[in-house]
Every structure is written in structure tokens, then in C-alpha cells.
Image (cartoon, rainbow, N blue to C red; front, side, top):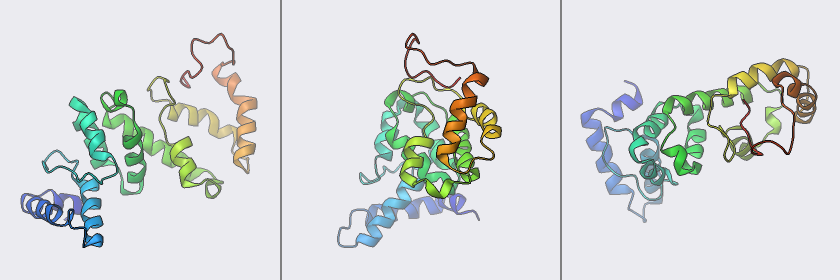
Length: 200
């Protein structure tokens, strides 16, 4: 049986809740305490489990509370995200403004996240990019007040052919600055309505 399916079965759910309740508060058993918190952070966002997340779950439960009526969508994103992308989804949710927590759909988050990870995986210079830089500079779906829209695939499809032969991030950035603006018909100007317009 798939691990997640097993955890959410009726019998396993009860066992899991008792485990977390027992060990998450035991400061004299730090390894088990951390394990209980980790399990909670990964799985207890599922709607079928009512037990609250421990306060030490790195802000996930707080974000879910702030999501309000959109909690189910944010929770679905946490449940459905592939394991290899889970850290990225958690990072986004912990750092989202309330307006995004309350409006973005799980499908939007999962699609954008998958495209970000795929683009990063395909980049020949990915080993030069730190995890911190990836999370802060590549993974986010928008910057500040940009429109929340599905821009990543279109921009990737336009950009990828331009940088196929580039050997470094710097070279790729220079190539895009030279070529991309003409393709998307964008010209930098202080007359723009706002400085952080979205890519599309």
C-alpha cells in the first residue's frame, strides 16, 4: 500500500494522531519529537485528519489558518506535491502573503512548482546554483505585486532556444537581455504603470 494511503486509512490515522500527540510534546526525547513534527508537517494538512499541527512545524499550520476558506486548496497542494518538490511547496506556503494563501489554487501552485523544478533540472549550470538561491530567486511564481498568472511555461518556451549553447548563468542572462525583449515586445520605461509588471 502507498505510504500516504496507509497513513490516511481509518486505523492508521488514529495511530498516527496518538503517536504525534504523545511524542511531539516530549522534550526529553528530541529525536522522536522531531520525527513527530516532521510527520505532522508532511501529512496532517490532509482534510481527513483533524488533529492540529504542532507549533514547531515551521509555519505551515499558521499559513493554513491564514488561508481561511481557501485552506483546502493550499492543503491539497501540500498533499499532492511530489516528494522531491515538497520542500519547495512548503517554502512557498510559509512565505506567501495572505492574499495568495486565500486565493491561489492547488493546480496553479503544483503546475508552476513543477515547471520551476523542471527548468532548474534541465539547466547545465544547476550545480552552481545554491538551494537558497533556487528557493528565493527561481521558485517564486511572482514578485511583489505582479499578477498571479501562468507565465512560466510560455516564458520557458521562448527563452530556452536562446540559451541552449550558453555555458553559465551569466552568459544566459546576457543572451536573454539581448534577445528576449524583442520577442515579447517589452521596452523598459519609467512610464510603465508599475515597476514590477508580470512577465506576460
